[in-house]
Image 1 (cartoon, rainbow, N blue to C red):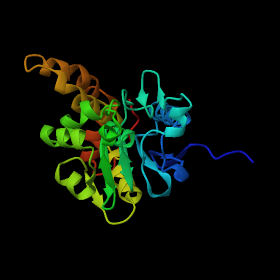
Image 2: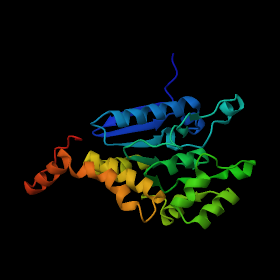
Image 3: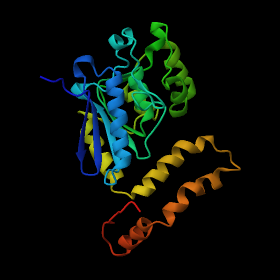
Image 4: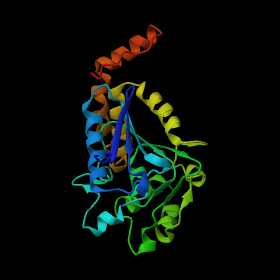
Amino acid sequence: MSEAPEVLTEVDGNVLIVTINRPEAKNAMTKAAAEGIAAAMDRLDAETDLRCAILTGAGGTFCSGMDLKGFLRGERPSVPGRGFGGLSQWTPKKPIIAAIDGYALAGGMELALSCDLIVASKGSKFGIPEAKRGLAAAAGGLIKLPRQIPPRIAMELALTGDFIDATRAYALGFINELTEGPALDAAKALAARVAANGPLALIASKAIVRDSHEWTEAEMWDKQEAYIAPVFTSADAREGALAFAEKRKPNWQGK
C-alpha cells in the first residue's frame, strides 16, 4: 500500500486548495512537501481558470516548521530558488490565502508570511521560536515579519521566541480574518470574493502591492505603469465596463 502524498490538491471553482498532508507530524515540512507545494503553485499560474490558491494543513495544524527527522538525515525542506516550503523566497503571480488552524511556527510562520492573505481560527498560534534552540528564523521570519507587523513587535518575537495567539496577531494586522471554527470555510469564502475579479487585475495588483516597497518616490508611478498598462488595454477591462453597464457578471477571459 502506497503512502499518502505529502501535499494534496483540489480545485473548488476557480480556486486551487493546497493541503500539507502530514498530520501525524503536525505538517512539519519535508523536501517532498516543499516540492509538492512548488508544483501546486506552478499549476496555479499555468491554468487559466485558476484565479487564486488556498494553502492549509491537514488535521488541525497549519505547519509546525521543519521536519527535524529529515534535518538529521541531511535533508533540507526547500526548493532551489524558492526557499523553505517552496514559497519563502518566491511567489506565484496569482494570490495565495493561508488558512491556518493550530500552529504556524518557525518555518510554518514563514510560510504564512509568504502568503498574500491570512484567515486563522481563534485557537491558532504563531511564532518564530528558533532562538530558543540557538537558531535564527532564516526562511524569511527576520526579514518579512517587520514589514508585516510593527518592527518592535517583530523584534520581540525574534528575541524571545515566544508565541502569540491569533487574537493578538489579528490586532497587529497580521491576519485578515478570525474564525470561531476551522479556517478553511472562511478562506474559501474569501477566495471566492477574490476569484470573482478580473484575473489580469489580480496579478497586477498583487505584484504592485508586493514590489512597490522597493520603489523610490521618484520612480513609483513609472514602475506602476509598467504593471497596469496591459491591464487597462485588455479585453477583460472592456468586458468589466460592459458588464457593469449591462448589469451582469463579467465573463473573464484572462486576456
